[in-house]
Amino acid sequence: MPALHPAFVAIAITGLALAACAQRREAAPAPDPTAPARAAFGDHMEPFQGQPLDEMLAVFGPPSSRRPAQEGGEVVAWARKGETTVDGRVIPQDCTVTAFVDTKGLVSGIFGGGNILYCSKSFVPLPQALRPAAALPPLPPVIGQ
Image (tube, rainbow, N blue to C red):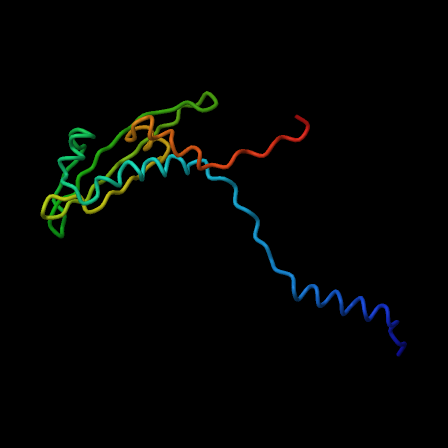
């Protein structure tokens, strides 16, 4: 069996040592374009937590549905429907905000379902809806411009 050249052995050992020390790095996630809408929606709904249902009724108007909850209290929902046009196609949009109300009449939980961009547009006042937009990092420059 032929002997290995000492330089080859040294390079191989160095390479293995470096590989053992290397740390795997995950790719950075792309910015989430819905982050500002989710933040605005959450910021707007948070003050209703633990407050009387009447406060939500005053802001959002009469609910689309209202029913007793199995555990007591009630489930109250506001639904909004609309549409948007993308590339010449009309796409339906919807959002439902559901409030879980305890037996004392206090809001114990809020859930938003549907298109979060439409939810934010439908349920959040405009200045607040725009405020979290700064949470998104700026887009990288386009090469050649």
